[in-house]
Amino acid sequence: MDLKNKKLLLLGGSAFAKDIKRYSNEKGFSLFSIGRNKNAEYMKIADKSYNIDFMSFSEVAKIIDKNKIDGFFCGAAEESINAAISLSELSGVPFYTNRKQWDELSDKEKFKKHLRKFGIGVIPEYNVKDFLANEEYTKSLYPVLVKPVDGSGAKGISICYNYKQFYDNYHIALESSVTKRAMLEKYLVNMDDVFIRYHIQDFSYSISSSFDKYTTSSNGSILKYPIAYLHPSYHLKNYLNNVDLKMQELFKSLRIKNGVITLQAFVDQDSNFYFYEAGYRLGGSQS
Image (cartoon, rainbow, N blue to C red; front, side, top):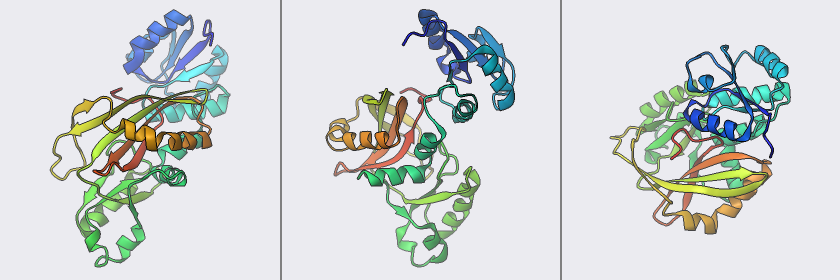
C-alpha cells in the first residue's frame, strides 16, 4: 500500500511512538494526535496535535473531517480502541476492527460460544444460579474462579474456596463489569499458561509468535507475576496440528480481516487446550 501523503490520527500508543515516527518518515505520511496529556510521547511526535479528550466524539469528528484523516492508530489501551471504533463508525474512516468483532472477541462469554462452535477447548463453566441457590450441593466444586465477562487484566477476578467467598466476589465481579455480568469457571491448577499470537492481513492468518509464561507463586491470589517467557511455546506443534485450522475458521466466521490477536490458554498434562482469552489488539508488553 502506498502511504505517501496519507494522514494517520493517533489516539494513544506512546509505547510505540519511536517506531511510528520512524515508519511515518520512511513512508511519507503525516501524523495527527488527540489527547488530554500534551506531554504524552504520541502527542509529541505528531505533525499536528490537539489537546482535547478523544472521547469528545463530536469535536474529534470535526477534526477528522477538517484534516481529511485516512486512518487511526491507538496502541494497546482498550479505552482508545473503543474510542477509535466509535469514531470510525461516526466518520467512515477505516479501522482494523468494528464493534461487533471487538465485542465478540473481548466478551469472554461470547468468545467461549465461538470456541465451542468450532470444537475448541474451553475452561469448564458453572451455572451461577446453581451456586447462589444450592450452597450444600456445590461444596464439592470449589475452588472456583469468578470474573467479569468483559473485564481486562485481573480486575474483578477472584479465586473462591467456599460459598461466602463466592458470594462476596461474585458481586465484586458484577461491579467490575461494564455490562454487569459475571461468569463462574472451574479453577484450573498445575497447567502451562500458553500464548499464541496471530498477525492478520487481508484475511491471511499467520502465527507470528508463541510462548509459555512462567510465574511466581501467588499464595492464593489471582495475581501471578511473570518471571520468564519461553519462546516458542513448548505446545506450538500440538497447537498447529490440532487447533490452528479450527481457530482460523473461527476468525473467518467473524470476518476478521486485519490486526493482531493474542490467544491465551491453559494446557494440561494430556496436552489438552483450555482457551480463556482473545486479545484483538497489540499486546502491552509485546513479549
